[in-house]
Length: 263
Image 1 (cartoon, rainbow, N blue to C red):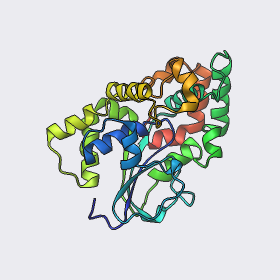
Image 2: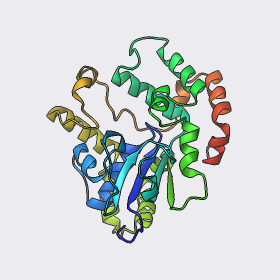
Image 3: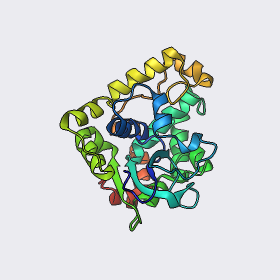
Image 4: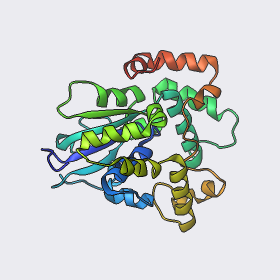
């Protein structure tokens, strides 16, 4: 990474696409296995939680949900990017449960899911994230993956990560110029597995360590059992969406779905 002429490597995605998973995986590969979410804020800070960000003098990993463009702070300092993309149906479902955890959606309202789906389809993304400058789902994806770019972009599909996390780790090593043994890659992958991250979440909750997994203002929903690391599956939304909703989603995002390899 020290050979890169610019200094920021973005860990980018639309919200609830697997960014935390990949953030752990990348930090494990670069710095060794991490034991808490708090470490990620030191090793790969979240642009949305920083008051400001000065151009770093040395290479820095930075998480973002912003599209690539004028609204991205220090975009001119981009050395490379890792972009995580997930099927929008599963992004929709994961955002719905995230909204329930944060209290943005009434947890026990039977019509809440259908209302959330209708809004997501109308705005082509979660209105909360659009209001925060993160764009529509297809806008966010296209901004990072459209070519040409002046810097390399490694696109990682959530579904491919599930199928072959070691292969994704090897591609990350190539992008960042890391030399890692098979054992080191295996340790990094194991340290970022769903089971391991769920264990870290439970430890952070027990210790009340404020960060990704525990926030004091979410205490009530956390105590009710709602978790950030909820399922870690692909294709789950197919069992929740009606045929009409699936058709509408395909119509809304068809071009981008094809562009990123979703039939």
